[in-house]
Length: 354
Image (cartoon, rainbow, N blue to C red; front, side, top):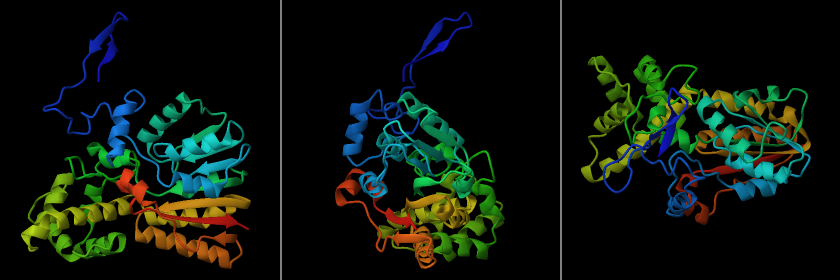
């Protein structure tokens, strides 16, 4: 991208964007048009129409279905518990039409600040939107004494985090094996992985991701450690999984390794960010922050999350905390999945406060 930087005397030095080899950018950093969707709207839309998620962006899922259920009206007060790129947030703010207030939380200091600036540029400043950098397990602390008309929690990891190799969520490009939603707190996945015993790793892979080759993968990872090796980058972990599955037929191996890597990264991400514990806390506190008749939606992306949400909503219904709860999950349409393949695994559940 062509940019400018200041000279010592206050003038500007023209700085050309980094060039890339070939006719198309390949790495995350080279995809400068995708990082600036407002300036290159047509280019970004072409990529979305092809079923691709532009680098540095996140396409919100089930937006129409969420808004249809929440029935947001001007003057209401709501909470977007998982701000992310702000796609859902923006649409909810549009429904408020400048009246009422929306609170939002996110633990990611990098992406939440980008989103704040993006939304503020669209006219959504602190008079209508309050963003707090905090875990959504603390939803009762977001606006003490306030009860919400609506709450949304989108539990998926944002595409911006997945695609950026510096965050350690992807094995498509090499990067540090980090996987923290908040890179300023806790320990990275590389440290946590080395601290786990072989049996603990097997249990983690099975519980957090239903990994069918958990034993073989855990055995191989520990063989690397016992041989004096390290697994500190995403590609080193990818290679270890590939070595663990070398017994599979060659024609099936590449796809099996890819799917197992997705599950291994998921399992480690859940562990590093204590995602199940956070979800437990959120579901336990949710009834206490909703007004009578208040509505809440939760989007989940794997079976473990969905089970917890389903059980909590059923229990809340039995205890009289909720007047209604979704009996069946709502899924994205085939058309939405074609436009955004990352929507495939999404499940939406809802409740209404008694």
